[in-house]
Image (cartoon, rainbow over all chains, first blue to last red; front, top):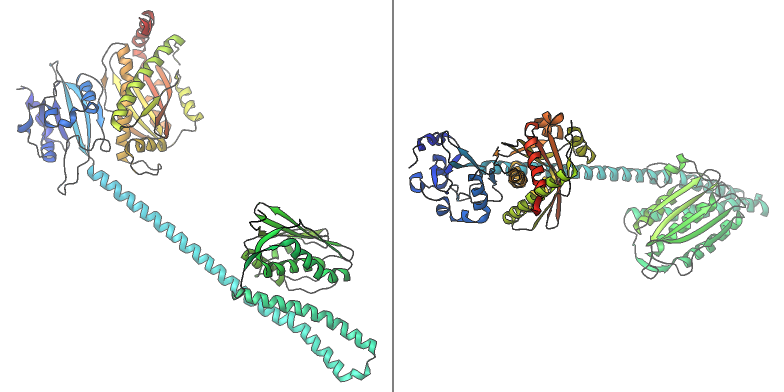
Length: 395
Length: 209
């Protein structure tokens, strides 16, 4: 039919599919590679129209650009993702082969006729390799993610162990110093009184008893905190959030601590909106308030002022216990709320402390879903803030 | 040196572009089965340095994907459609709906982009070929990835001669909006036939004759 057909035979030696059509869409060449991929023999289709053998190529999306190309127009590409079956071809497992098809035009020497050359490349294995590579990459990323998680868990666990160790050290430190020394002093004074009771006048006896009384109040407070703290460490504190009036609670605590304030001639007052209702555990919040107010009194000079201010901030009540007392420097501030750092300071009237109160405050505020922080300036005073969730009623 | 065209001549080029864009959008519609809106709002004549600046101003340097189609004949040169790779990935996704995270671009996605880019470039160059009433010889489209220097390295000869047209293109497919850049380099030796055809077109009254 075409005397130059022989020239195309070179395409039987290439590893890509080659089909040549004339301007009437008639197949003039079909190479060996296409015979293998499609199971269609060249002898069966040469001379027949491309659209007759592959009727789906009659669709405008194929026939329009192919016609343009074989009439001298630009080349066209039919990619594997958008055209899965330009030349239907299947792998031995019946999965479709992914064939990338390009059509361009050419003229033979000394001939005027334009031909279309359809070249077909198999992208199936490339596609498999890309999928495998992506799978491996995703697995590697997952592995890295998993390792990060494990490392984070280890870090947390190490931190927890450090805290537990610090808790134990703190506990022993309190037993060894803060309890042993005052109780030792108690024992010695009582021993002295027991042996020489009749030698002392009534006034002298009172002089012995007064410091004992003050010391017993501080010891009792310490024991209360110690007990609370040990209960919180063992998880035996039962947190039962309920709605309660914060204004009332602050007033009650101010009233309870007013004697301590009066003794140091400190003005103690509250600035709290009426009917400020919160949703938290009453017992733990009472402890927090009492500790913070008591601390403020402790570190305020006689004649000073301690104020409890409460405000609504978004969905929380923000409580601030502020004083115009001795304040703290940055070094001291960095040691507050930390179990792993031992820090105590005597109050303005030489009141003793263990630093345990603030640690308890932090735990109790956090267990109620709030935050605690401090702002302070040396010789100007401190502001201890904490938040607790508002009740639905207040929101 | 930058070639200068007057505003009337640029309007003709813009009109050719608009015709090509319409044809490309129709073909893309028939392939994807989706409504593809393609816009090339403003074409500019630029120098090579101004062209590089256009990319710098948009923060485009690395991770670019480009489809190039070169042509010879009465007018000769090359045309390019350049995308930020993440935009190219989005464009392929709009046509194929295959899962992708838009960060990597594999060879299968690249050959799909080549098909889409080729359709757009064919339609645009076809419009110019129609204007000068000639048929051109085209190369097989080439996909290149890299930074802007690598992508423009084959066109460095245009830094001192020839005509460079630049236009920002916008694809809108369903909810996705994708931006690419179209560049047309015309060899200095073949600029005159194009200018003559434009002038003849204007003389004849353009589209209203």
